[in-house]
Every structure is written in structure tokens, then in C-alpha cells.
Image 1 (spheres, rainbow, N blue to C red):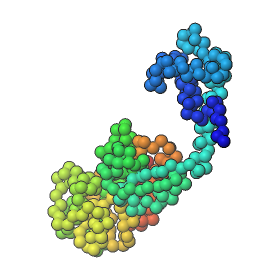
Image 2 (cartoon, rainbow, N blue to C red):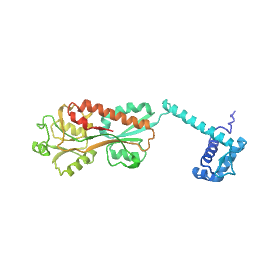
Image 3 (spheres, rainbow, N blue to C red):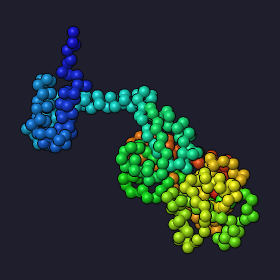
Amino acid sequence: MKKHQSNWDLCSSVMARHVTVFMCAAKVGSFSLAAETLSVTQPSVSLSVKFLEDKLGFDLFERSTRPLRLTPEGSAVMELLQRYRMEFSELLQRIRSDNFIRPILRIGLIESIADFAAASLVKSLKPLCGQLRLKVATSETLMAQISNRGLDAAIISSELYSGEYFDPEPIFSSPLVLMLPIDSPIEVIDSWATLLRAGIPFIHHSKITADGIAIQRFTDRFSLNFPYMLEADNNRAIFQMISAGLGWSFFQPWSLFESGPLTTVKILKAPVAMPSRKVQLVCPHLSDRTIRETIKKSLSSLVVQKSETRLSPLAPWLCREIKIY
């Protein structure tokens, strides 16, 4: 036998619609404004309020006043409904915090960050989401997916995406450094001529990469020309070539966190201040502040740890130039 459902079930779609109309009209103080706010007709608002009044047996509004004003009974009903909504919202939040309802999180990482930080980020975010999906790609590809809502968050390293819509949140930044083979006779670079005179081949970063773009801008600015025969679009490949003694190149410090033993290379300071690249979190559609802060804290803590263990023994000065925001 089908159980009869009471018309006063606030979870029913019909009753919920009437209650929503009543609460909106009470808030804005006008049936016409409520209709405009809810994108319905004014007669529809009047009918919803009349439906509730008929069920309750008393008036909810004093219709002779302008602006519209609640009757004492209407005020009591409004207070009850507001308390009901607040209690329901608090209950839902408690359930979520107990990890019964956890969101699916789609996060993108550039390759150089994923190489050393993917596992750490997953461990930090696992308690906060029901499912975690990682995408590794270039900053441009990740930002296209952010724009299309294909990702909830992305860790990128590009200055092209600023402005109010993307609102990137900086995590850390570091300057480019010079990396040479360990058997290179050069210990200090006091001018670019030192490198040219040494005759060590230059290994070029492809211009389609963020590092390649940054390096090209830098060399153009100072009218530097380093002839090259070797080029790659992958930091690990360039690191292996330098380790094998095939040449030198510019490098991002964080690319060294998982690049292999650093006993085959030397890191030297450039003769001029080098441009820094900033790693940023972009998540314009992610409202969960806890997840945002967890991502930033997890990555910045890992950068500090890796800098101290990997870079400090080889280049103590470099740790001081890595900025945590």
C-alpha cells in the first residue's frame, strides 16, 4: 500500500518551491521584486504565498503596507524556516567534514612540478576528496582546461595568466641557474665571456617550453648569443646530457629535485641577476579554501625540504634565492 505523503514535507519539490518564494518575498519586501529575483511571474509569487497561507490558516504578510511587511505569525514562520535551513547546512557541513561526502578533485600539474611533488600532493589531498584525478601538461594546456572547467585547479609556471578571472595565487619562485658538467674547469663565472672562452657547448631549451621562452627573453634583453647544436624540450633529457659532459645550460632549481644524483654536475651563479619563474596555483572555480591552502602548504613545504637536502650541499647560496610566498 502506497504511503500518503504529507503536503507539509519540506523536502518535497512543490513545498520547497512555495517556501523559497515566501522567503524571497519576505527578504526583498515585494512580490514584484521576488518575481524578478526568481525569474517567475508576480501572479505565481502571489499564488505560492496564498497556498502557504491557506495551509497554515493565517496571513503571512500585511498587504496594506509598503514595503511589504510580515505579520507576527509570518515572522515566526520565517524565523523557523531560516533556522531549519541553517541547521540543514550545518549538518551537511559536518557530514562532509567526516568524509562521508567528499568531492572529486581534478588538478593539473606542469611536468617539472609533477616529477617531484605529485605523490606528496596526493597524500595531502587524499583525506579531503573522494576521488583525485591528476593531469600533467604544459601551463597553456592546463589553463585551457581551467577555462573550460575541465580542471578544478592547476599548478602552473607562467606569467601570462593574471587578472581578476584567473586570480593566480603564488606559491614559490626561483631564479634560473647555470649547470655545467662536473669535470668543467670553471668554478666561478664572472662574465659571459668565461663560458664562451671555455668552449663548452650550449644546450638549448626548446622555445615551446616555458624555460625556453624565459631564456630567449633573457638572452635577447642582454644581446647574448650562445651558438648551439643540441636542443631538447625536456629538463631530464638536458640534465642527462650535461651529466654526460655534452654541454652546459640554464636550469630551474626545482627541476633538480628529482633529476638524479647531483654528483655529475655543478651549479654556478650567473654573472648577472637571472630572471625568476613563479609557480602559481590557479583555481577560479574552486571555492573550498581548505583544499586551496592544503595544495599551497604541501608544495611550499616540499620545496623547502628538497632545497635543503638536494641543493644546499651543492649550492648553499641558491636556497636563499628561492622565495616562498
